[in-house]
Length: 173
Image (cartoon, rainbow, N blue to C red; front, side, top):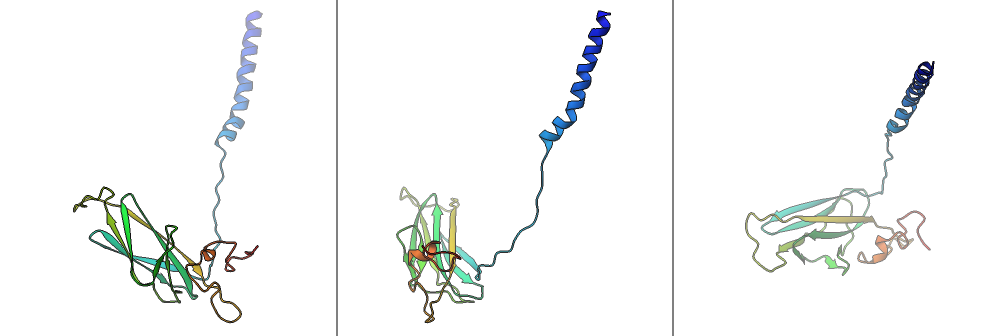
């Protein structure tokens, strides 16, 4: 009799555990997938051209959109970089190089030369691999009621912040 009670109790426990396995598995394996997206049109589209030479890159940014824009470029590397501005570029002192002119639709910036040199001032040797990452940003030009760009100076830091640039919706104070 005791044996039957023990067997019945064990069977009840096994049955109860078996009933709980399916919900537990469902809880631990639940996941969801999402798809879709929203197209975001900022009114301008830019691309970058990078040409490699011995120990550097020549960079220019192309405005392929319908509106004029401002452009800035930044270069990163584990090696020391020497940026040689040619004409229309200004060192902003914040790691960015600003293009001094507005880039009209269908136009490109003048080249920016980024030369690479070793931090220890040793000669770089052929076959040595050096990674140089180029980051660039562009911002739509906003014109005031007189048809003048606001702000007029492409190196003005307020262009690149949401607070100072009227190109950002809801910007201001």
